[in-house]
Amino acid sequence: MSAQASFGPDTATPLGFVVQRGALLPLWLEHGQAAADPAALATALLAAGKPVEAIRAVVVALPVRQALWWAWVSARHALQLQPPSPSLAPLHLHILGLVEQWIAQPSDGTRASAWQAAQALGIEHPVALAAAGVWFSGNDIAPPGSPMAVHAPAGLAHNFVVAAVAVAATHGDPAGTDERFRTSVAQGMEIITKLGGWAAAVQLARHEFTAQQARTAPPRGGAAA
Image 1: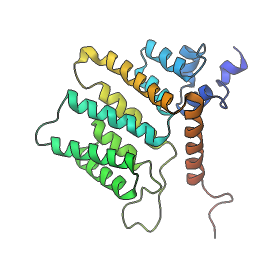
Image 2: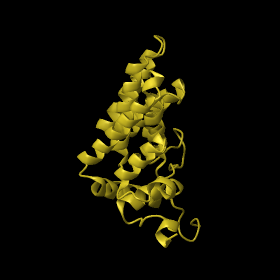
Image 3: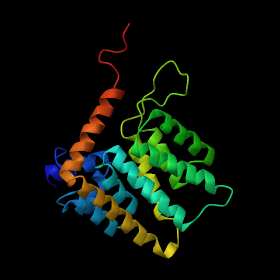
Image 4: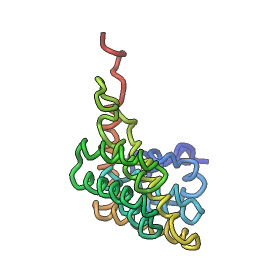
């Protein structure tokens, strides 16, 4: 086995970034070493029966707002395929609207409202998972009135996007689940294309993730006296 195969593709490349950020090294070693780029890796993962991991390979290459737009579209489609009970429909639509509002114009007020509504619903549904992604994308996840800011771990919002997109694909006729997963991955790749391709998208995602890491890292030398 070559040194590259042992440690994965160069993390300076889009493929290497995706493998590292998506924790996909074992699957890359098993299914994706022939992949020239993340698109080929996602396609290989789909072919290997790993649709959630294929979604993750695309999600981690996206900046958070674009990723959450994908989650919003997926959640909206899930509601169309399986409408909630009449008693819950208003809450589902309210959460979906808050997520859309935040994507269009991010604000801490909308972010908090989306999270509060998602908690009232329970975060198993794609709309609530998308709202959770909105909440954990922010600079501060401390409860209201807290004297200190609490930063979410870097990249946590993307985990909720993966969950939202994947769970949304399971809504509807079970016979169409595989096709919905393929359609979802294709949709995510279309977002990559609109951002200018994998290199451009990963550059944005890398910059954003690095900034999040710097924000959440403990001070050098320990806490100030």
